Image: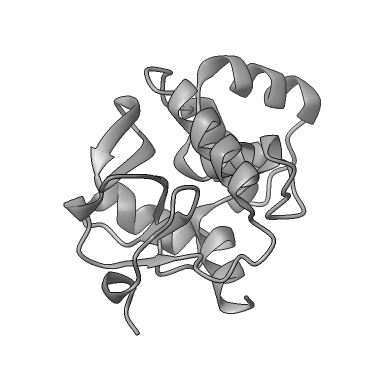
Length: 163
């Protein structure tokens, strides 16, 4: 069954492969075929963090996607918390600091004062994968065993394989 055959439920996250130089850089740098993630909020709409900020978009924007359709621990209350958190972030800026930190880590550089960078990044905005990780964390569901600000689309896509 393809992702298009699956009817997503509010609170599901989706991973996608997009085109462009930055998308290719993300895929190469994170060793993944996926470079973007979003949260499905219902009625054919998603919340996603893009370079223009956190926004609501139509889910048919992306032709190739995969959903986390096997989350047996996501009850309606958790799904609502994920959606509510995602919607509350709409209008916040993109997390360019997070991208810089991930880029430096990909180069093998250790970032001094990691808590400082995490706090600064939180005030600055979200990258797509951080938005998803934070939304799930707020619902009491930790997706990846690392700080939300350094979770990548590849991390979330890899998680789908092991569901």
